[in-house]
Image 1 (cartoon, one colour):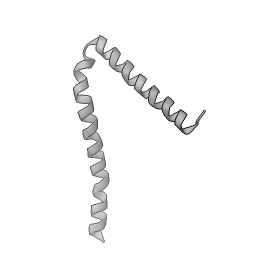
Image 2: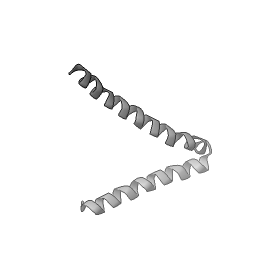
Image 3: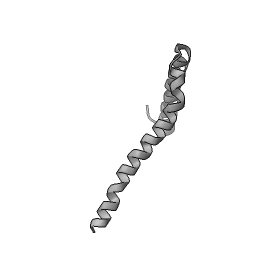
Length: 65
């Protein structure tokens, strides 16, 4: 039974390292864009627009508000 709990305890560590790896691989190519003000503003605008699009789409699909 100890081996079972040892094995199950590995899943959260795998999930955390997997999530951090994806976050790192997404952020790494975008770091040079943040160094110039023009592209930084465009990048922030694109992130905000994407978040709003996702929010409005999910609200419409789920029938909220």
